[in-house]
Amino acid sequence: MKNIIVVTGASSGMGKEFVAQIDRKEKVDEIWVIARREEKLKELQSLVNAKIVPIVLDLTNREKIKDVYKKKIDEEKPNVKVLACIAGWGRFAHFESVSADENISMIDTNLTSTVLMVNYTLDYMKEGSNIMILCSGSSVQPVPYINMYGATKAALLSFSRSLNRELKYRGIHVLAVSPLWVETEFFNRAINKNEKPVVINYGTIDSAEGVIKKAIKDLYSKKDVSKYAFHNKFQQALVKILPHSLIMSIWMKQQKLDGTPNIRR
Image 1 (cartoon, rainbow, N blue to C red):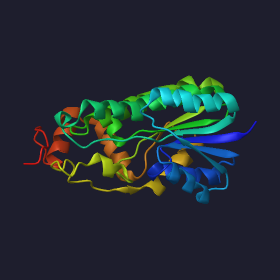
Image 2: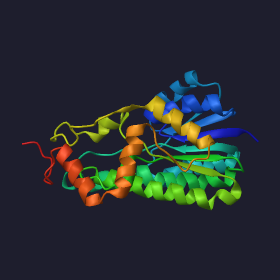
Image 3: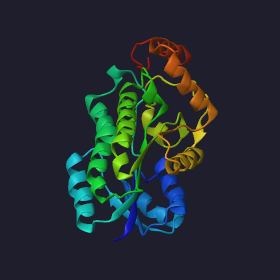
Image 4: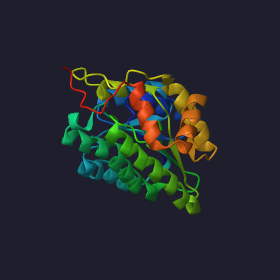
């Protein structure tokens, strides 16, 4: 039986960084990398010693996840040492500026695909295996103008932490990774240049390398949630004690948002 790692959202950003770093930590036969851009997945081979197995998949398509990923893992029956669900995207916009299709796409990519990946992979995980799920600092507070993205990440945080308790009897650990802003391609899709900017004050933007290094350390230390850097830990601590109505007001004041659609005039 071969040992493998499975990573979604592996073609760039934190997914790509995770592939590079986990190969140095966990020695396996193959790393199954999942994303839509096949050429980017193939390029990962130069970063690792394990064999890269590209799986080209649109994670918004539930039937394709079943037909492609579930079929493959059921046929090969590997031992999955690590499942990392990193794929996700968001939009910086007033809810009325986001189409229904975009909202459903965020739900399917961020949340539904993660649930399905866990469902389809658990049968092939043993004691000592790990699951890592990328959440967000937006998962601990309501964030106007990043409405649906934050909602999906809040659901993922709750899912990850409760799943960790439920899988303890099997010796499988689940880590929720909760960073703030990270320098990745996320912003390319989140920002619509034809709309007024939503976020004008980012504060600190962390590196994908640093966030993932901390996440892998926390994964093997059996932490519940991974929070990179002091500014992140401090902000999330404040959110726990301050009223969310105040947190939202501070956020909107920082970004000069007045509650109206961000249509450029």
